[in-house]
Image (cartoon, rainbow, N blue to C red; front, side, top):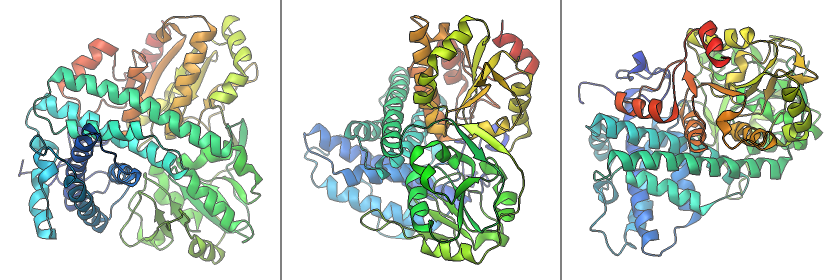
Length: 546
């Protein structure tokens, strides 16, 4: 274990599809990797304590649940690169854990992580190399533990967004903590860990349902919307990440400032919500998926607000106009915290924007989206008729993430090659591989139906279940529906686990299968769920349309 400077294989781009051992492909340093590993370890310890308290009939405060959630979220790929944040969070987690530990009557069954504590950075530095992924020696146990943890990280992201909108669920938090604590239990069998993996998928559905309720209950149901991808003449602020509450606060604070607001990457779906349409200075979407941000943030000219993960360590040329908030963090960039009432003061960003040039135009035109479940249900009769008449032969769910690898051009080529009587259902930044192609429509139904952010994969599941009902089928797999999903980070993992829980089979996952799946665990997924990788465009289309 010690020959590696680090070990991380949680994202799709991990080195050699085996693991980053010297420096993270994402930009994560070995020191940062160690502290993230330690934060996960102490969060497992805290979770073991909260789980023990619940077993003794004692309650766990909501702020503790939220602390576990944000701890997990900050360790998601491309979220936070600030070492200091992780030292602070480890110490704070230990403090919370030690306070709660005093309330546990039976401490005998607690794991070492629940009892370990430290008071100095030196102690943290000494402990951190011993608690990483490779601390679990058995490859299959390690694989399943990490699959569960990455699913929980993805679920934590969705819970955090729901929490920001004052939506919460104690049962989900309790499960997350119980599952985290279970990854410390060396007595669990392979079968028990597989069962826990599927249960994580079940609770993942609950988490996505909670966030959907939070988003739609606060901002209305997304509706079909044309989004401008050009630029105006006024200076702008670019908002990236995923957090709608941050965007709302910025829009409200900037409405009379003479500054325009643009979305980037996964914030694009904000344009689909009715509540945001009242802001005249909310002018459009700038750029593409997260991995193109270095050149796009450069040409935007104005400040950028990074609300969550998917931040790339910035170039010096725009670092002074990159701001972070929430789980995001970059050393040397201003971080904006909320006050005790949840208010964030964005005045510094707005004032900086006023001194900047308008964005440099990189493209023109419009893209269409807003096909979340309520909107598609409104079109259900039209969709069902199109299927029954043969106008629509098949739906392709192409949700998930985009990324840097050239192999991902497969998804653009796949979309182009699909027959004209097929429809793409998408959510997540994977859409940027094909949402600007002119693929036409079928009887007025666009051939790319964008449901929204990666968490809006829930909408795709609801649409599939609605179609199953409409066609009076007993099995979702009998639908004219194929899943060809691109993945990158941990939010895609919880979506995958949720789909497996819902009974979806024969999902194609690419551009590579996860490095954290051991051969035996991959075999279980193949045999039980028909999970497979991608091939050539031609072969896969032939396979899907057989």
